[in-house]
Amino acid sequence: MSLVVGHVIRVPEDSYRFGTGPLTLHISEVVSRGEFEGATWAELKGREVREDGSLAVRERYAFVRVDRVQPVERSL
Image 1 (cartoon, rainbow, N blue to C red):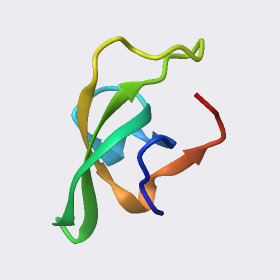
Image 2 (cartoon, rainbow, N blue to C red; image 1 turned 180 degrees about the vertical axis):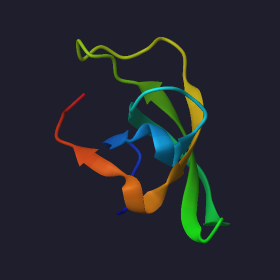
Image 3 (cartoon, rainbow, N blue to C red; image 1 turned 135 degrees about the vertical axis):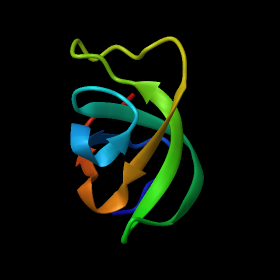
Image 4 (cartoon, one colour; image 1 turned 90 degrees about the vertical axis):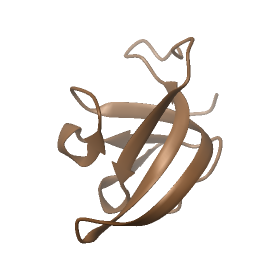
């Protein structure tokens, strides 16, 4: 899975740090990428996409397991 600025992704709760529930994120920056606990993880910066499709006001960081990321078809 390629992580690209401007894309929207969804990550299950057990595949990112830190938060509760699945994460839907509009990526604004790919900070880093590397091996951690036997898998490739990436530190991302972006804005959460709410259930109603709106974006959270503040950006956040998320550490996500790359092989568990799913692309979301959505244009912002």
